[in-house]
Length: 220
Image 1: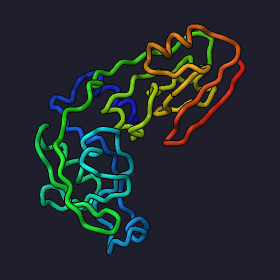
Image 2: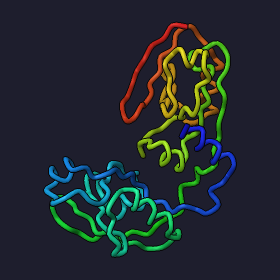
Image 3: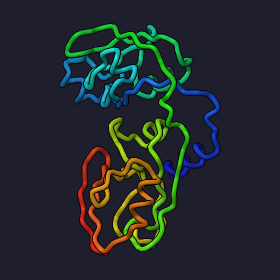
Image 4: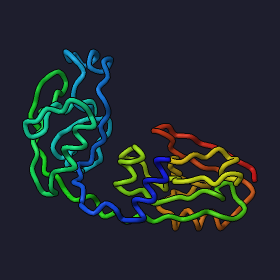
């Protein structure tokens, strides 16, 4: 299971080198996307998310832009972009050839260190509440990338749901981001644990699942 592997890797600290950060998420350019953008054929990696004030945002890269090459090397597929970026050192300047709004433009940016949220903090939720049986974590840059979370996702992310627990019966899933519970914004796992410990018979919560906002109310 991908989420389990992510957790093991994060806890084990197996990311020995620092990955450069650009503050953008990319996806594959399908034939349909290429056609809709007026490209001759599918190629490159399309920008689907840009983090506020990250290197990509500051360089002018926008959602819907397609990165076609990096430092003169063609990017045939989104995986190639990830691989090429991962091999570059933090602090290096890169030049992208970008298909933007029907034009070919050159975008320069300096790769920075990931934001200072790289330490994974998790908590197993317990007690009499609909979240009991879920393992949640603060959202780190690595988790955003590996679980394909929105750059704007704020809250705690569910890493694991134990079978037969209230969280399992409530229908929560790994990679769900819990944004608020009973009117309290969930900034991190400490806040989540406090809200859960306060208990209660009725639970209102908002979560983000794959970019969709879900609001629910449960009596417990």
